[in-house]
Amino acid sequence: MSRETAQKNRQNVVRTASEQFRTHGYDGIGIAGLMKAAGMTQGGFYKQFENKEALECEATELALNDNFELWAKAIEGKSDPLAAVAQWYLSPQHVPAVGQGCAYAALASEATRQRPALQTIFTRAVAQQIEHLVQALGEQPESRTEAIQAMSQMIGALILARAVDDEDLQHEILTAGQSRL
Image (cartoon, rainbow, N blue to C red):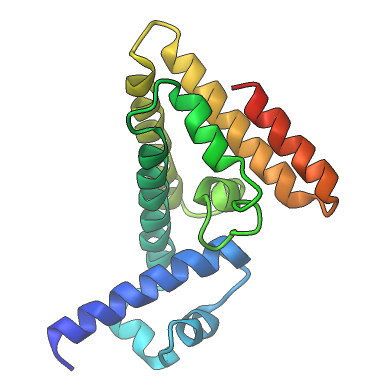
């Protein structure tokens, strides 16, 4: 196998793991399931990764980087960045898109039960997201608090909307989350 093919296979495994961890949680899928979802055999895993924890960190970092890019795209050039990101983030389409959706909403509650390296990855991503929102808000004294409140509110609203099976209540949660921003 060429280096290029090996690198593509690794990227495929990381991307697949990123989606699978968001869908099933870190403990909800094992190496065999991850490799099968990536279209590869389990034997190839240890040629690419030291262990599952290393893949969890790499896949989570990818998911959080994807989050950052999506949030940045949603607020780019908007006069009201928080309303813009809330409209995109708290949409009915985002609720069922767990595997491709927000890693904060899918995995943050699990991070506290995982290795310290994973919490470090979340810490960096949250800090980066807050700073980006602060810049979008104009770096006023209250901007940091406003960014943290908005981020917390949106993530919490998405988690609650995903937790209920009543579409009317889901809609009410999403609408309430948007209206506060």
